Image 1 (cartoon, helix red, strand yellow):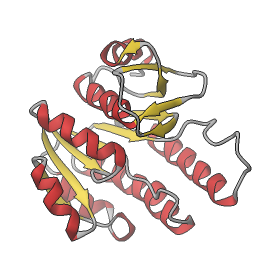
Image 2 (tube, helix red, strand yellow; image 1 turned 120 degrees about the horizontal axis):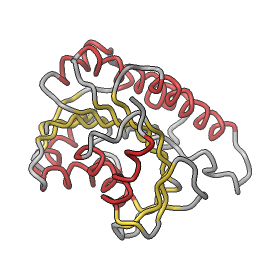
Image 3 (cartoon, helix red, strand yellow; image 1 turned 120 degrees about the vertical axis):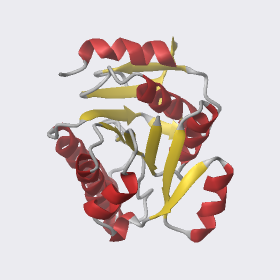
Length: 220
């Protein structure tokens, strides 16, 4: 498949692009700094220089032409309210509309676990981030795309185990970025899993089995 990754230079996106390229998929990846282009090309990714803070659905749709699926794993990463609104909010909306304009049905959105950060003192910036992520989920779920919303627990950089806990509603926990990338890879290769929100943490079930089990809850 030809997969368009928004967030290809991020923690999950870097891992995903390598997995997909090693599996023989063609990858197009967004970047906004010239210094990121070389690393993308080294991983076999076709780089596209577009800044989500300064783009449009039409421009994204032109870049997506010929792709089979879109993965949105971009995020502001605590850079402030303006970036949260521009990337996690408007960026996700532009991307979903771009997929529609480009005739792409498959759209995977990396969102946020509802219980994330609830054990810490609340901050206005984090609360705003969670609100924007929820609004993006609502937006995408109202489209006619074959979407999947993936809500991982707190992301960690430990090596992945290849085993997860995935479900419609599960206890909160952490999950390695490696395993989030593995789940996205599996979702790309199992298109029958669609129109479903999946919560994700570390667990005991092999990734492909966990993803396949979600087909029973997939919408039509």
